[in-house]
Image (cartoon, rainbow, N blue to C red):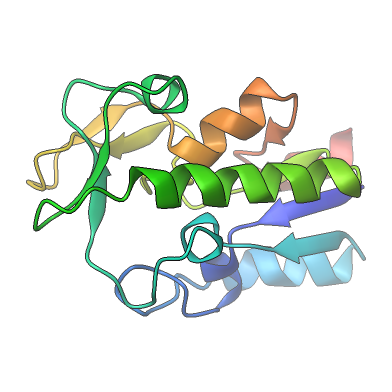
Amino acid sequence: MKILVSPCLLGMATRYDGKSKLDENLLSFLLINNIDFYPLCAEQLGGLTTPREPSEIEKGYTAKDILNGKGRVLTKDGKDVTSNFVSGAQEILKFCKSINITHAILAEKSPSCGYSLTYDGTFSGTLIEGKGILAQLLSDNGIIIVKEYKDLLKD
């Protein structure tokens, strides 16, 4: 089994604020169970710097809309970074297909990686149901987004 993992969850400083979101239990789980994992950040692969201005999917649109050419991903100061998000997600999908990655463990709430919750596009901290760009693209292409990584051993 090969797993894509949001690098911030592994302690890499790839988040928009230049920090990580280390999940020591996840890292231990991957290492102890000898799981092949690949840390890739769609936002960095799409050409965005770290740190970077926070971004959200435009209010009223979904990741599926963005992937279909409708709506935008905007920074807090209004810069359109849609192409960065989409191209980074597409690069990761290509990589996943090239080495047969079947599952992904992603950071929730991110406009790239959110797998069930994202911010509502107002930069008010309000969460809504929905996927980020990468999570949507991977799901649409048959890659399973893992919500409880311990379930990986059940497959």
